[in-house]
Image (cartoon, rainbow, N blue to C red; front, side):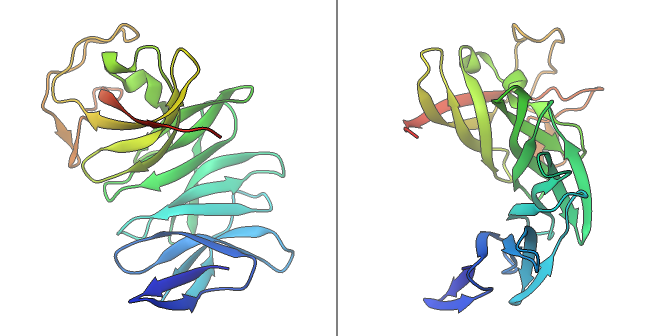
Length: 229
C-alpha cells in the first residue's frame, strides 16, 4: 500500500496493490498502482492525486525515481516479455533503449543524468548511463583504472554532483556495493581508443561529463560493502 509520512503522520496514497518508491522536494511520489485489469502502471502522486503515466505499448510500467523538475524514470513494457528504460515528462514517455536486452532506469538527478541497468547478452546485466538522451552507455566503459577486474551490474542512484551508487562483482565473483566519484584528471584507459580531455571538466553542471562526439567521462570506483543475495 503506497503511503507518505509527514511529521510522523501517515497518509495512504492508494489501495493494497500499490507501492511508493521515490519522492522529490515538492512532495511528488512515484512507483506504481494497479489498473482496472490488475496490471501495474507507473504512477505519480501530486498532492495525493494519482496520475498513471502509461507504457511503451505493452501492458505495464513501473516508476522508480522523480527529480525536482518532475521528470520520472523507470521502465515501460513494449510487450509482455520486453521492457525498456523510460523517462516520462508529464505524461509523454520516451523509450531510452538498452544495451541489447531488457533495461530499466533507476535514478535521475536534476541535470537529467539517468542511471540504471541493461541486459547486454543473455542474462548479464551492466550498469548503464543515459545523459539527457536515449543513447545508453555502458558504465563499465567509463571507469578509470580502479575499475579493472570489476563488472558493474547496476547503478541505483546518482546525485547532482555526479556521485553514483550501485552494485557489481570483482574478478573473484564477490558482489560488492560501490560508490563512483567523477574523476578530475584523466589518463587513457586500456579499453578506450580515445585519449580523454584533461580535467577538471563540467558539462551541464555535472563534473566529469564532456562531449566530443561521444561521452568522455571517467569515474573512480570505491568499494562500499559486501552483501549476499
